Image (cartoon, rainbow, N blue to C red):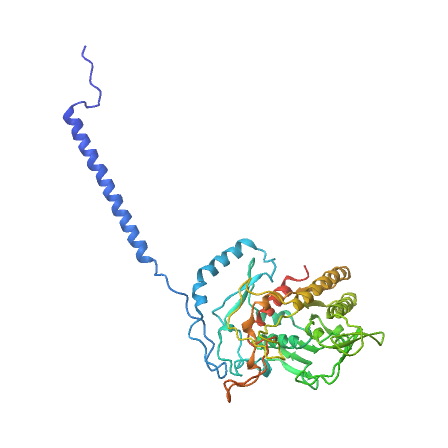
Length: 450
């Protein structure tokens, strides 16, 4: 019996024919795939926009900053920083979802948005800090912001802040840097509501303002030593006699008002470098930098430590539970001399990390502040008082470009381009780097006591 063939066709011609069909089919698939890839590639290419350079900064209106043209574009560093800023933003999101990081470890990064106010929109800038009106020719220092490395730091939101501070009282207690700081505070808040001045002393060093629609009060109390002191200086800093500093008595100018304050920003430091005769129990115990007086020479470190201990013990022991900030010392940037010997500050860009070191006196002062803060914070925690460290020293050190310099006075070179004028390399232009202090202050308030 002949077996039937299976359905498989073994005819050579038939096999070849089938192979030919299969090859044609494979080639068709290959060509179709290539065509599809080309089509997709082209469509992706055409749908992706060309890479553009970062947009120019949002310019402050030229008539808003008196007597000073603004740049049509940012410095070169801004355009080059675009990618790094994007990377930093992603790193921030990954590193600190909760936002709890060290706000004082960071860098100054380009900020195309510019300042929140100008000397035209804020009427509270004192003449010595009104750099643009006084004729400062550059404005690049306005286009930087402080950027912590491990989290986002939002810009100060004046509307949100003033709503939070309804029926509250803030006080800035200290020397002229505190006065500089409160002006920055006022200028940012003025974008929401213009404060009404309700008090000033004879020299306008201590002042108080009120925001009627929120019943919010803001004070600055000039007390350069925080202690009781008899000072014999004129408005230009020229002394007719040595300061008499009582190391065991607080200045009642601020302590008698303390019970009114919901928030207090306390700072000192630089005045302790001046000549002073030290007193305790109404008896002269020594002096600082007073040659020829036949008195025991004592260090400013000793006096400053005594002062901070007294100040912090008072606030931490008080039955009034205020939210207290201790602001650390502010470095100056005098080069080629000091304020009294021709020192200048002509830089126009921030320092980068590692380009500058803290001066010895600032290192000592900040060391005292850190040690006294740690001791007081423990006491405050036991007594239900919130004490926060506003550690502005390092971030301020990196901004040699933010001072008035010769433009502490109006048009200093108008009559003589080579005029020798006194420079201010300690206080800050407004607007300027000091505005970033308030970004941090608001973030610390929002975070609360923890």
